[in-house]
Structures are given as C-alpha cells and as structure tokens.
Image (cartoon, rainbow, N blue to C red):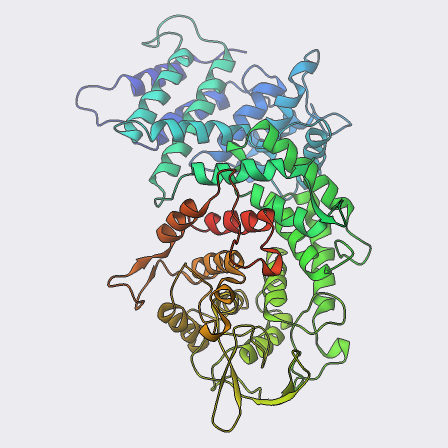
Length: 580
C-alpha cells in the first residue's frame, strides 16, 4: 500500500505556504482535511486505513470521528468500509487485536472503543459494552486514549505564552514525518506515519477547542488532596461504615464516594484512581436487587447514591441497571398507586424507603436520580413532586398546607401556617431551623438554607423555568440570607451550634442548585458588591480543608457530618459545580 505523491505535495504546500499566505487556522481544519484525504486515497482493498492493521485503522477512525467534521458511519462507503475492516479484528472476548501482536490488544481495544463511540454509538452499543467489559475485567483503563492526549496537550498549551500558536506548531511538527521529509521530498513515508500525524493534529485541534471554551477553574490541588483522602478510606472502591467496633461495606457511602472520585476528569485520573473507580462500580452493580433498589437500608438514599455513581461513569452497559433503579424510585413515590390522595401532606414526596414520611431532602436526591436516569421532566412523577415541593415553600400563593399538626418533640398539636419569605422547610409544617410564633399561637416553620437550595434544585429539575415566581421567590430568599459561614435561617435562639447542622450538605445542594438555575453572582446580599459564589465557595473550602485532605463539620455532627468521609464527599461534589 502506498501513498500518492500528489497527496503529499498538497500537504507540503500547506505546511510551506508562500509569504503572502495567511497562517494556518488555529483549529487546524485544512491540516486535518489533507491528512484524511491522504488516508482515503490510500485505503486498502478491504477498507482498512494506514498500514491495514487494527491498530492503525482504529486510531485513524477515532481521530476522524473526533475532528471538526465529526465523521460518522453515515458519511459514505469508505467510512463504513474502514469500520467493517476494524470489526473483522474483533475477538470473541470483545477485544480487538492484530494477529501475532497480543501485547498490543489492550491499546488497540481502547482505540477501537473510541472509534466506535465516535462513529456509531447506537448500532455499536453491544460491541462497545463487550470491549469495555474486557478492559474492565483485565484491570485496564476504559478512558479514551485520544482524550488523554488532548488533556495533556491542553494542559501544556495553557502554560505557553500563546496557547493556540503552540498547538499549531505542535501539529505542524507532527505532520513532518508524514511528508517524507521536512519539505515533502524523499520517499513516501510509512502509511502509519500519516495516522500518527492525524491523531496528533486532531488532538491539537480538540485541545484548542478545549482552551477556547468558556473559562473554567482547573482541577485544583485542593480537590486532589480531597481525592487522596477518599482513596485512603476505601478498599477496592468500596467504602465502609463503622458500627459496634466493626466495619461494614455500605452501598450509600460507596455510591456517593465513587461519585465524588469521578469528579476528577477521567483522562486525568491515575491508574490507581481508575482501578479504584472500576472496582467500586463493579461491586456496586452487584448490590442491586431484583426490585431495582440498591442496598438494604435507607434504600432511597442508597439507590440514589448508586445512580449518581453509575450515571457519572456513563456506561452503555449500565443502562438496564439505571432503568431498574428508575422504576424502583418511581414506585417509592407517595402517590395514588400507594394509596395517597392529593390532599395528604405526603403526596408527591419520597421518604427513606420504608413507611417513614417523605421529606425534601429525600425528595431532592430522588428527583436528581430520576433525571440522571433520563426520565423526562414532563413525566407525571415530577408534576406530583411539585405538589409536595410547594407545600415545603414558605410562599402563600402556592402553598395550600396548613392546620393542626403534631410535633415530634412531645406529640403536641399546634396550628401551623406558611410564612411568605420564599424559602423552604424540611417537610410541610416542620422545620429543624425552628418556628416563629404568631400572637394567636400559630407556628410558622422557618425557612433555612439547605432546604431552600434543595427546593430550588428540584424546581429546575422538575421543569420549572428560572422565570417562574416560585423559583424567583427561592432565589430572593437565598440572596437575602447569603453566607458560607453557617446554614442560614436557623433561629438564633437554638444556639450557635444549631446554625451549623447540615453545613456541608448545604454546600453541595447550594452549588448544584445555583449552577442549575444559571446564577453566576449573588446580588442583593449583605456584601457591598455582587458575590461570585463559585469563587467564594472555592476559597472557603480551601481554607477549611484539613491537613489530611478531608473536611469535617466540627460544630455539629448531625446527619453524619461527624464523619470526615461524608463531609469530604459533599465538599468535592460542591467543588465540581464550581468549575464552570
């Protein structure tokens, strides 16, 4: 197989333009097009690319599928021919290999997955799953090798004086060997040199796009220090809870722990981090019951945590497990199917998973998980959830809950009503933040931060637009009570420590809610100027991180915040929303 002289003459002209020619475009369109044209003209009779091996064909296809033209199987017979040629190298165990080169099987398989995902992810879902399973069973990374190259190029380019020029120069240097000499003279090169050049140029092109994207906070030492702490708390990706002096594997902690570990971009993870994540996800999959639930206790929390972890991995092979989890969470909702009427206080809610009443915290986890399983916001479950959400909001126009209710402290009956500040409470008529009492004895449950953030998050996930008055009322409460020092809204009469209950949980739902609603700055707070909440939260968490990389609620350990593992997970999940 040989490459035509005319193809390389055109490439040489591209790389050695006349003085009057403009510089090559930053995103390297012409360079990519020339290399793809050369590959097409030199394709083998069997459709293969480069030297005809699975290695060269997979890499070429992965690059073409990720370049600015985003080639797919539908772009013509030569793409389909190359894809068919690659599939002929597929083995029974799902891997891809060249005959006589077993040592390269893992690398070839990783590139083949990248090619199939880019060219035809739907039709090739079975092949992608089988190849991914092969890598996972062998203990190897399933991350895209092209993404790893892009990540490193972008990281290096950001340190250059002119990042885009640096990437353009890197691309040109990579194309030199594909020309048979610096000026395009000499014999035609090995066809694999063209594939090598295409991979590098496309990677430079993608790195340029990444750099040109809206500025995002880079992965920080603070986050990495937190990841390092989590790695010390697990075994083979499983996290534990201590009871009676013994340690037991816990589905809920493992789910949120794995979700936190996956906040680090996959391409940037170390081999150890990848191994831990893969091991944990494999264990987590085994914990799902026939009914779709994960774990045996607090099954709403544990199932939602497992969904967070599996959805973050983005594996096609987990689709069935996520569908079963979705079905289970829908079954948990307190609706007509479970004997509830719309007038019942619990209607539309979800609780811990037994017969306990529903609450806004459990509901926000469930709504989040249902959306992660791709349940459409138009689904009736979200419409019914809105009934409960409105009853948790101190907004008289939309909250129809009131009357006499019993209080958990002593079982006494009290008249309750909604205030009108726009914030939210734990469940209708109940607030751990305390109560304001009217002259006639009616109690108004106090709005507080973590539940107001949870309410705002749910409103958006349930399909309400940011302009909806219920959303706007919650935003106004947040602006008026903005602080990172405590969980705002708690009655001062309850004491200073009470104002710190659920603090790290509040950081997580705050970041998720504000990011979802599209708020970049908090306006109208006590500060003299608008607050960049992402930057403020990053600085605050960096300042409260402990020497071992963990975080801990040292003022109030309620709701498991006496565990550094839980606080660290919440902090990392919050920081994940501070990068946009």
